[in-house]
Image (cartoon, rainbow, N blue to C red):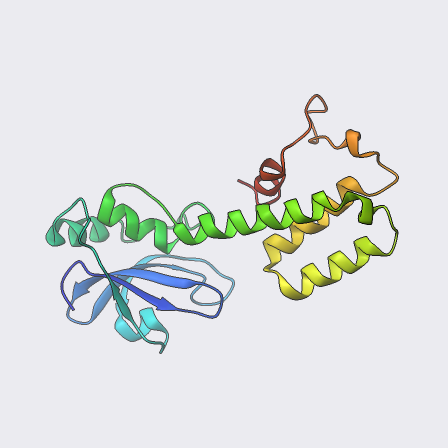
Length: 191
């Protein structure tokens, strides 16, 4: 491994990211590494970063900064404690160190999946008018989708099933406009 390498380690439902800073140490956003309590950006051992899982090195060829600058940028954020799963996670941190902008392709893919799931439910409005179908959709969503996607499915079902006519679907606080599926998904996710 080289200084400034972008490291990642697969978890059950996501991929964890960090920056290698030498001597077997990684700087990463601890996030939910210790369960449901969020953690700050910290320097930890390779084992602490990987949680005993395999560690991989991503290509940093297109990085905006030199390896020394990447390490310096990582150190400059030590102690930051503003973790947000959707807006400021370990992947956002690593992309900031490498490219100068926060970005998380994982989150972008998840939001796209949530939006497409909502679209599937929304398009099946006729079936949703049947009182049995919405419950089946909710059960399937809870069983097979990540919690944020399942929540979007439940909200869409709630908005399009009787007694509320479809044309009465509105944003709370802004009854003048009908939300797009993407905006419903983002609203539910708090974005």
